[in-house]
Image (cartoon, rainbow, N blue to C red; front, side):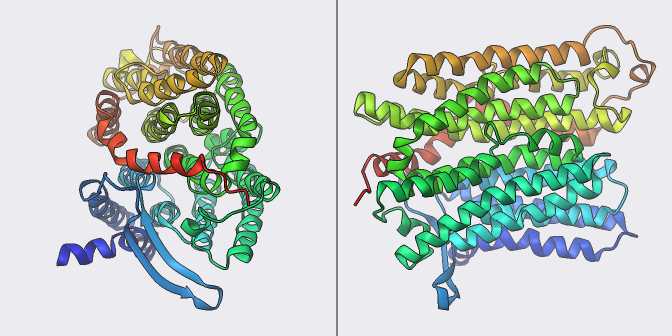
Length: 508
């Protein structure tokens, strides 16, 4: 009985435990950093352990929402506190709680000022992100979606680099402006249907013109989040200025909210518009994959290079989601399309692990030398062999090496896009070459070669705390690369349900 009760409140616990825990960490005060860190680690670990039933108790045979909670919130406007997860959201929540622990451990030494506020910001952000992935009421989703910006804004603005104010304002304005259009779309859907229930909207008949306007509103919000070309310019700035923990959460979790938004809103609510405008998203995805890959090659700053690499890899997510329509038009079936959507989801989780790991490796070097410039390094493997092993492995995974998770998602999307159009697949496959080019060139300039800098000669290899964080991520990347089956099984039913849903026209 206890277990059943627990499952009934599971999502609420995952949202509110880190948020209230964050308030508790804040109360610890700036004078007691050790207490703040210990308490933050305890809450983050507890949240991760509580989230494990999402994997072990998850029913993979159904596409229906699980762990559902439904309570009235603002009854006048029919707004409910409505939570639930399916095969799309459960893996992303697990990814969020997993990184919650690692970010607290990663900031253990590097953050010296206002430790309690830093840890509290991350805990609150973790709770809000879980809220985004589990909200089934559109207004509740929007509240979490916007509220999540505030702690991120503070993390970059307070603990960031020298141009942090410029980066925070740019980040805030871009994301806020995008989400205003989404809010207008949500209000319109409420007026038409009389409910905020996202699942009810999935079956709401809408004319093609209306769908197109709604689709463009959602596109504005989610394209900024992923970010897609040409609204991607805030991301390199935000990453460069953010502290290591901020970069990790931004890359590993926040970017995924854009992909998740397409799955939850754009595709099921506006399927006809998605089918009519799929060329736009595919074109922008392929530009991101190829052009941004070249931009990454030209970077002098390690963080900027990884940030551009993130944009390129996230292009696969949008390509995998929207190529489904082209496949259906060409083949009349959805089996190839299913591969693309599954590939997009695997790519989201995999990119979370790899980009998070890469930003943490840059963080390790930055903590020691306070420089992100590639030219300041060289020959790091001579003084930090253990670190070099992890760094090269993560860079290999970033270039899509078979056996690592980076290969699985990209391969599935390329295989799927082949069924739509040969040129889609060719352009998408270019990223494997470009990814290898900028990743291996980075390894060559930073990790290998002769030691040119006296500071590099004096570097200390990673300590047990850093080894634990990087080792955990290395295991996760290998596990997903060698055995992606548990993740694919988790979302199989949800993917099939989504595809059956989007091939049926909703035009009145």
